[in-house]
Amino acid sequence: MRTMIAVHDQPALRALARRQRVAVSELRTAEKRLYKHRLPVAEVLEALPEGTREAWMGEVDWQPLVLAQRRDSQLDGASKLAFRTTDGATIESVMLRFHTGRSSVCLSTQVGCAADCAFCATGRLGLRRNLTAGEIVDQVLQVARLFRTEGRVLRNLVFMGMGEPLHNEEALHEAVEALRDPERFNFADRFIVVSTVGVPAAMVRFARRFPGVNLALSLHSAREEVRRWLVPTTRRHSLADLRAALVEVAGLHGGRTVMIEYLLFDGLTDTEADLVALGEFVAGIPVHLNLIPFNPVAGTESLGLRSTPQARREAFGAALKRAGLKVTLRRSLGADIDGACGQLAQREGAERRS
Ligand code: SF4
Image (tube, rainbow, N blue to C red):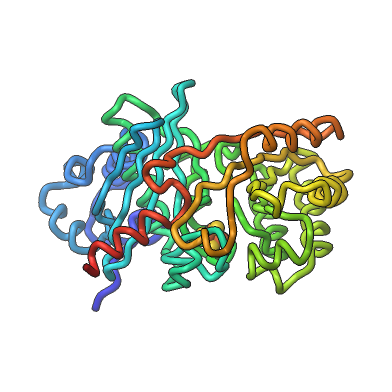
């Protein structure tokens, strides 16, 4: 089977334009329609000479993902999208609308995930494959188009959907490069967040290449044995290694705060011992702690995972603030649409199997 050119692959598109005698100005107009105006593919193609459009349809993979399902939250401004890949896998993206008018998308980087986090539905799927950079970029394009129809502009990109982004490092770097490119998407570095469970060497490589882009560490516990149980993939390195990487990342960020995501589980990550361990882990590193309530996932009841009640979440946050840390108590969006990562894909998969 002939490999198609990914739409964000500029050198390959330029070469195709040369072969088909499409003027650079015509290609630029097409790219402007695609990236800046976020128009549908048919309207993008109209920028190209009539005689070449069919060939470009056949040669370029304009839209590798098909929107298979959409669920809109009745509680808040979240919409969960399930996309079908050309090999029949399902991945998901979440559109987030905030009352401030800000629009954001949570992106997937893998089909399934090998990290196997105890609290996550995607972890149960295992890893099927990495997404290509084209599939990552297409989530952004399709979501940006949907926001456009609502009169909204997509501003924030969060790599926090299915998969561990730093386990798919090459495609992640390629996609982030395209998304930051002023000639194409032009997303500002400060509005991009890559969330990781913590792959120390890859975190440092990412921060070296993209020092302005935010990294968020999903720590969830600063106690070694608890973290290894919650996030089994982290057994490969110690919390000390992770902390050393975090120090290096903060240095590469020029002292900008590094975000730390921390899920509060009743009796497991919200105890006095957790407060002490967390305080020691972040001591001297410029971090911003996001405390997140756990959205229960089917199958986690038997593991005894429960969300920390709100009053204790607030007390935990207050204790950290008293210790001089920057803390935000987050709320979980999209609870009624299986907002935690991987849940919609799992359900959609179940429906297709049945
Ligand atoms: S929480 Fe993220 S890293 Fe962990 S299994 Fe789920 S998708 Fe993978």
